[in-house]
Length: 459
Image (tube, rainbow, N blue to C red; front, side, top):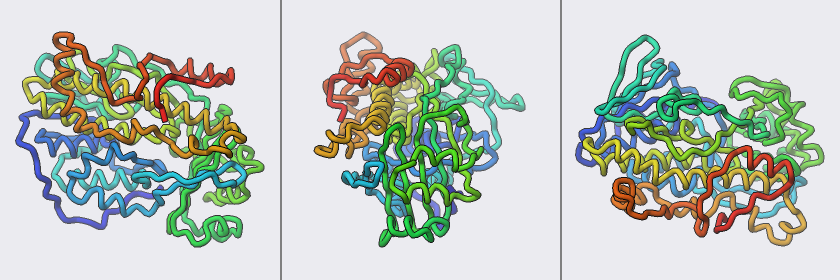
């Protein structure tokens, strides 16, 4: 995906809440870090970002952003409107692997990850939020009054709260949990490529599939694999999730021959193999999909450091919720810190953690359930009633406002944490009592062909 190029240079005037007096250091300028910084600015916090990279050249292709992550940005003047200029379709066409159309689904927002990240970066800069590049945090620390990081050159940066938004490799692990949990292979990998539409549209099979469509997004479900193929006026994207044969790597820039992808779509709708073979130099990234066990603790012992986004939780692409949950983290944390203020910042961090952990773990598990459904589909059943295949996420994901939820439940959660007053979250799967689970348990069940079933309204 090409870098985002801004065509808007005017400064932004955003109404802000009164100053909270809180200083917040954000480590990492990805989607989670930037969105938190923007919402933290709106909430009256003094926020700055450090980023290890020399600049932002974000990788990734399409992302779906659910409605739950769009409430707070509606208070960011002009931001959602800019996002809706995305050239990718917000309607997804769901197909059987052979091309049989099963139905359509709507995404509240579907766009290039690089473009979305670019818009966040641009917006943060226009607000005057300080972003310091080529700044590597090597060590996190905290004491009773503050937290901070030690940089590679020995410089020490500190703040009332440090937000670890530095991804799956975050250096905050040793402080938060005392050890760094090793990621576990999900057993699958993702072939992906984005390239100019002209490379593929000259092929008659591809041209016929997208005839009359400036924008179109297809999802094909097949045995052991699924693929998303999306077209805008300028680009084509494909993302093929398949069994990991051991050759994939957790590296966005290393490419392999597309010949390695073709066996997974043999016998599928003919245009699919043509789209894959049209990739530049007949190469694509084969990205190993890693996962971590869900954790209920994202905060350091003194609750001056808090992990958000991928630093706290990783997602399979089939959750269609990874970016959404990172954004929800951002809004929830900014709100809890507003309610707690400078004098109660650690308590606010703990409340945020408690309000979010079960919901996120359920969303992670939902991604696994969806992948199993896509790759082991009972076609006779679903051709009679395809409705289950036409809903990528449950209503409990969509019908949620993390900012309002924090406002509504902060006080009750404080009482629960301090004096043990009963409190039960209501932002996860209705009718489901959360039970801890591990990635290995789910993988073992999949290998045995045993469906992962739970009570409650996951759909």
